[in-house]
Image (cartoon, rainbow, N blue to C red):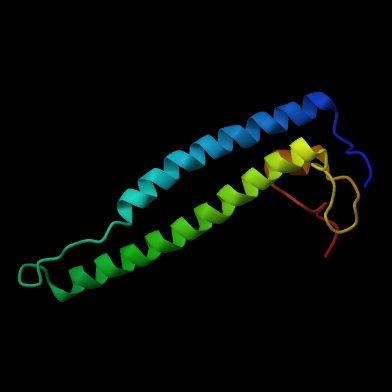
Length: 115
């Protein structure tokens, strides 16, 4: 596996960005977890549409939770690649991933040119 095209200061800048995004995501995940708690509806006091809205909101919240968990894992894996010295290399062609791409998507595993 070749060396990354990233300079040490760039790697540290991206590590800090990954950690910022993880912290932000942790806060969001707490909020989502609270919103995902089952809603107890009084069947006599709440209309059919309100129950349907509540069920739909729970479904949307569940989807958000799944996306947050996937992103959380991807961000952690990016930090692990930094530690392993493989961060900034494409998983497909082993070519470098541009700093600009990593700045926008720090968890990126491909160079953006590979299919």
